[in-house]
Figure 1 (cartoon, rainbow, N blue to C red):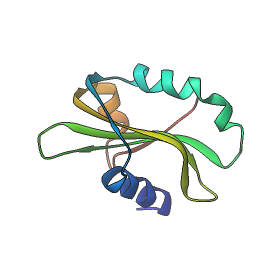
Figure 2: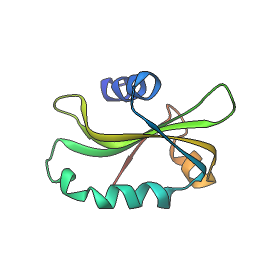
Figure 3: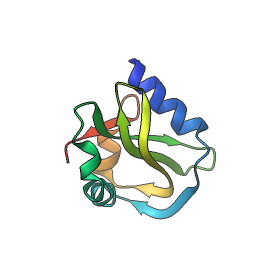
Figure 4: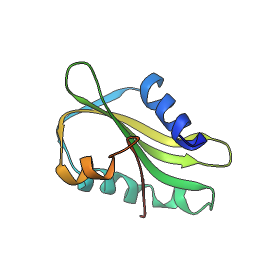
Length: 103
């Protein structure tokens, strides 16, 4: 796993941010949040990224944010917990659970 994925995964599993609960998470939900923060992506070192992991209760925990690849830190992020995710969202996160978006 590359260093960025390791940092994203660590933040996803151990981050202390407040958790937003949603029943069904879709790419549209994520893209709306990213578009509202598009100005944060003007720096060439920032990317729009998500990490999704299943948690013990069968729910999904998603960390979504603007990540700075130069400093290996989140510029802004949020944590979502959902009962289910859309099929296209699950497909994007196959493998290591990390996805990068073009906004």
